[in-house]
Image 1 (cartoon, rainbow, N blue to C red):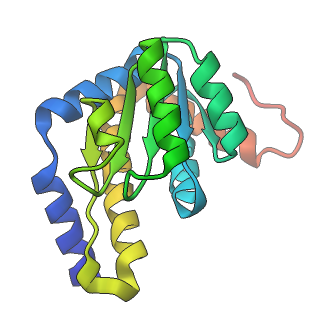
Image 2: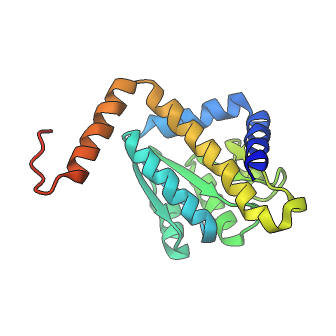
Image 3: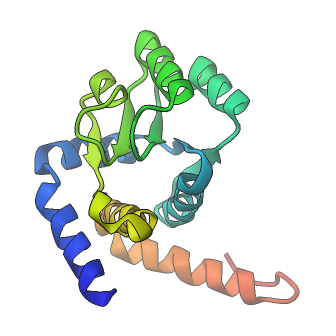
Length: 186
């Protein structure tokens, strides 16, 4: 599994388009809010990424409810970064949501594994994770190892602009989280 994981990270890294990755990180960095739309197991990875984003001074919300995803598409402001995670990119509801975002002129990011799919055709901001059909029993693990690497990389870029501030915020969070009475100097 260790060798498979290293291989997945290497493959993910090789297929990342530096120009697109730069545009994606700028889109996420530009505003204060990040809205992530994902379903099923992708939702768990989205929650992980939202946790990281708070450490990068972003307010990150994850929506797995189809109803709320539709409301996000109808109401989100252009200063929010919107990320849609879909392994195959063919979920008809997420495609509908992406179409609404596109019609409204709201830029959005797609994270997927399939090079050609309905979501990819709607935005130039696409990051590709890895999936291997040959590892049928490990297919889910493969995609999530790849997603985790992409999300960790984005986080590292976001905090690299002010590592000192990121460290201070992390330290403060730890002190507040671990304190019993909340008496911590901000």
